[in-house]
Length: 475
Image (cartoon, rainbow, N blue to C red; front, side, top):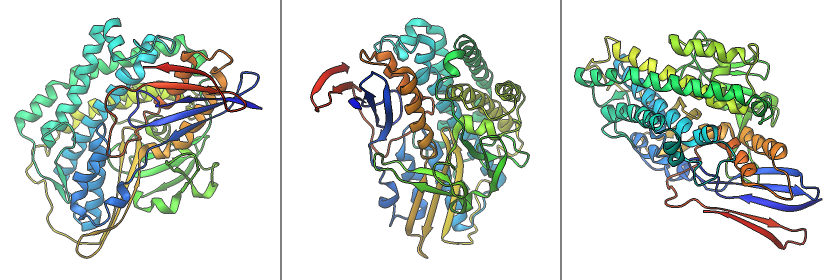
């Protein structure tokens, strides 16, 4: 019989708002745990009636951490809607901005959001288990982490005029070319970025070596895996076909992103505002899959930059070439992707077309419908727009990266709670592990508004008759 419910609200060190309810049995073990996304996303509806070309400016307001992803996905959807294929230099510049986004987002997550758990310990006091605690524990590393994020943000600012909500991609291309001096400034920071990421990779591998017991019992479960790939099944973050594999690594589908509705559908549960995408042919929950760094490295057979490819070989060996199922290895995969992005910055900046002024195709072949797909830091992002003959949007469908991982996050929460939470004396560190299960996926749950100020947690333990047994607070 369930005798008490523990509520974690809000979940900390993520983007957006969620809570967790842990339902306990009378013997002090966990019956089940649920992750609730308790904010409503209204963008799809209030974008109806807007003009399609406004979307690259409107949709970045969905998130202040990954605005570039929405900006570029919107632009790609507009390219298809208007029939304006961007010139090659424009695609190079868009991808360069995207690499800046990957570096700043992945770097921030590992060192400043997830890092405190790994570097200071899951059971460290909450008041030090944060970036301030990292400064005290290792100021040199913290400075490198801050400079890594700055490097990515400066790439975004150089191209788009500002670090957040850039103004750059337009239907058919981009609105600014890259100057030689700007390219050289970007190139001057690549070695330091690679160095910081290599330090992060060594930290992660050292931590994994000391904590294999936790890695092997912390939300390890099979799913499918989903994301963009190159024609040779290499890691791809900007453009390509979508590859979907099953839990054994076998191909299920390979398709153009515009056909996503033929392949996936969305399930709804009454306890969350976030839908649960799944592979239609296998149904729900048999067809659930994971996206993001772990998903992308599981579907990738190679990486087209040398340092990241060597790390991929080590990653693939973790499960003898089969898909890696360990939730905590999301952090390792995230750093490998960031290393690829830093190497890719150099490749893009060295391309002879990167300084070209041929950055906009103004010739239209208007279709009124377009789908844009990109690999946001957190996973595959899909923008789908339908407009009338005047360019007014009639329908907008957004499947955000975190949505694809909704089932996996919920399952991870339930698994970690059952593994680590024990009553009657529930310790804060136990609950932090449940939060860490969500943080591993680096979810972005926000819509257009963000919380400001303190993020306290209050845990209410409720008895069998509904009475309040105990309250635990964290400021």
